Length: 284
View (cartoon, rainbow, N blue to C red):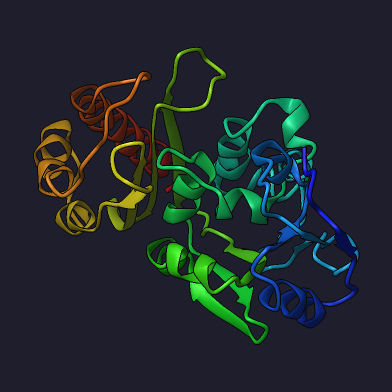
C-alpha cells in the first residue's frame, strides 16, 4: 500500500515526467506499478504515471525492433516480431521474469531498473546487439552493456528509461538461453545466454552472459575473446570459461549457495554456447 502518496501526476511527454521526479526526492515513475506497490515505501509522496508519455510502443524495421519503456513483458512475448527476434530469446527470457499475471502489468523499463543479480531479461539483452535510451531530461543512447555497468549511478540521478533498441541479427546467427530454478517456470537461480554469428564455419561474433553468479548479470568478455574465430569443441569451451568465471563473485542465499551458483553458471554457459554454436552452424 502507498499510504502517504499525496500527489498523482500523468505527464504527456518525457521532459515533464523527468522534471517532476527530479524535483522531488520522494517521487517515483510508475509504468505498471507492480514493484512500487509491492515495496510500499512509506516516504513516497508523488507518483508520476507514464501511461500518457508516449512510451508504449513496439516498432519493427529492417534494422531491428524498438521497444518502449512502458510496454509490458507479456506484450513483448506476444508481439510477432519482438517475440521471435533472435530465436525468441527476448520472449523466453521475459517468460522467466514473472508469472503471467505480473507480466501483464510489469513493464520493460521497470523490470530493467529493479533487475536483480539473476534477472533473465537483462542477461538476454546483454548478448544481443542492443542500445538503451534514457532521459535526464536530455535523451541519451548507450550500449546496453554500459547501462548495466552504470545502472546504479543512473538510478541515483533519477533518469527515465525511454526505450530499448534491439538490432536484427543476421541470418547466420543463433541465440540460446539456459536456466536453472526451483521449478521449470520459477524465476532463475542462475541463467545463461549465448549469441553466435557463424562466418565460414567459425564464430565471427560471440557474446556470452550469465545471471545469478555476481552482483548483476555479467558479460564474459575474456571467454568471448578466447573463443572468437576458433572452431568450437566442448573441450575448448570448457577451458575458456574459467578465465571469466574467476572474476565473478556469487553470493549464496536460501535458493543456492555460492558454490552451487558457480557450478551452475559453468554448466549453463556450456549448454548455451554449444546450443548456439550448433544452431548457428546449421543456419550457416
